[in-house]
Length: 254
Ligand code: 4D8
Image (tube, rainbow, N blue to C red):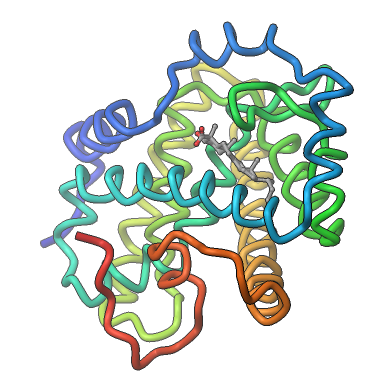
């Protein structure tokens, strides 16, 4: 099927997003008064790195499960073969989580919502992957600074999800077409909220490249951690998503 710039497509994406975004803006705002104390931060800093990695993996996996639900609630996403759906989720889910991270990021004090409290970047220092963590924080900051509305976050995260040039896709062309329709609708929306719509769109497209690099960096650390922290127990979905073994059939999406 072809995708026209239909109200339907946009409203269905936004609906799917609202059903699966975990926290409303209001809830996130009410949390923002809960900033982790210095002692609280120190507790995480003093955790064994493998333990902290396990905890982060748990939190990220929870967020990913909501992204999977987001995809499943979208008619446009579901119109692709399961083969392509799996590739899109496998390669894009972390990128979408990072877009969502921007909502849970407080620009004023540079903290992110983690384990019920807004927490600074130092919390994650013992992991020993400063380039990854600071890249994630910078990404969240740069998206947060664009002041997107919830509908705009919905469309942007969907555009990230349906990136058509992931390796192995069957319907790259149709995905690319869908993505330009979604980005077109997004630019339309910017006319109501931003003074320079093409400029915002350019910034978002640059962020898309950056998201991809961060996702690659995360996979690299995943392999490294998995090798060094042999005893940590990880959520099965997390292992399945980031353990690169193309021969492994997917089992935990359902
Ligand atoms: O809605 O699910 O409640 C971050 C994780 C967000 C990483 C989560 C996290 C999110 C990245 C835990 C560890 C972003 C929300 C909460 C948990 C995304 C850091 C903070 C979700 C949006 C905010 C709020 C550490 C949720 C960056 C990364 C460490 C690695 C070893 C990769």
